[in-house]
Length: 285
Length: 308
Image (tube, rainbow over all chains, first blue to last red; front, side):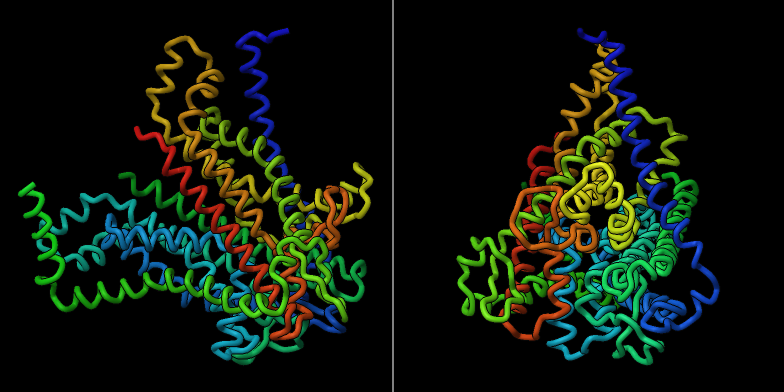
């Protein structure tokens, strides 16, 4: 029996709506399970205590600090290079051949699997440059990994500033850099800021590169220099869930650690989304 | 022609001669910063080559590509056949694509064509949030919860299996697909839709015969990009699929992917050993694969884009 055209439409459209509901459901189920499992163990002591007895007791303070340090390194390396690249690509090399080559490199860099970045970090930062299995090796690796994301989001923000703003500035006799600094960047800033938050949150959640560049399973102390070994939240989730001595007994710790990581990353993402929304409402070109 | 030449000359003059030193210095600094990306890409490739090169002389390279046994930690006769890992990666990624493509497409069409702005304002951030969840969280969910569900429904051979990884990867692929595909559909101009509706087509017929064909290059690119991401994903499959390295094609049994092999084996490998270099070779193969997949996505977009 053939359905009538109208009936087909109704059937197909409810199927599409079903797909959308399924995706939202997946998100809710995932977050819901982690949250309910993690809240049981989550407490102030859990956040501020050192791990004890091979991670089976105590807290995850060193892992939180380690992840915070990694974010700091990424922030101080990936952001300046990323923003400068974005400015150069939009303002100086818009249609040139070299610009195309640069853009192609960024595009391909974005597709490199994270574990391959781990191999890069191991080969270059850990072994060749002699930085060892350390915070700085892992931080540099993550910085390179987040660079393409940083560049493309900053590029989008800068390119969204209409050319009339630039032309008005040129017409008043400003140089290229004066135009960029005083007239393009201020408008692009909220967009760039959104990109920064997203990139750093990506770095905070990344695990695979850390495994090859010096993350530690358990430390009773904080790293005392950039060349020290460190703990990190995402690796702690992985380690506790797959390798620790008593997997079932430490389940609450696994859930709680996963929840802390999830809250950190989701919080940053939400902040970025809200920021972008407010900025979009403010400037409508 | 003459005008063009003069223009060209003028631009070159402006670029080189009349620039104040400050402007020149800034431009140079920006240029150097931008080179980081090219240097990084070259470093990735170079490092993989350097790391993998010794493997070419210490093991038989044909055996590497055709060997069906991956047993690198055997004390006497380690075997480095990449086929089981490659098959593992492909099973998980294709499985994920099979699940993600219909759902992702349905979602993108709904988002681009049907959803009201108010619903959209909630749904799009939800997709973004899903995309932002760290892979280790997906892996943890698959390990602890999804595997239990699969055990109940399918009664699998091993509790952690390829299906577990494929479903979880599908959830990760969907946000990437939806973002790219929705953009492509939004880029289809309104008057095409209106022309179709004016000819008496229903909204579904318009979507099927006008919007989807017109945005096909973007939709295909979205699928390819998401597939590339799935091939390169590490933590989720590492935690979800059980990491047995036997060659088979059963979705209800454990598999190990190429990414997972690198991540796991580096925990025990001796620096500079055969195994160490072979893992770099696996990384090189992985890099080349994702490079080709990304290139394909880019090519599809360029080659088949409809200009409006």
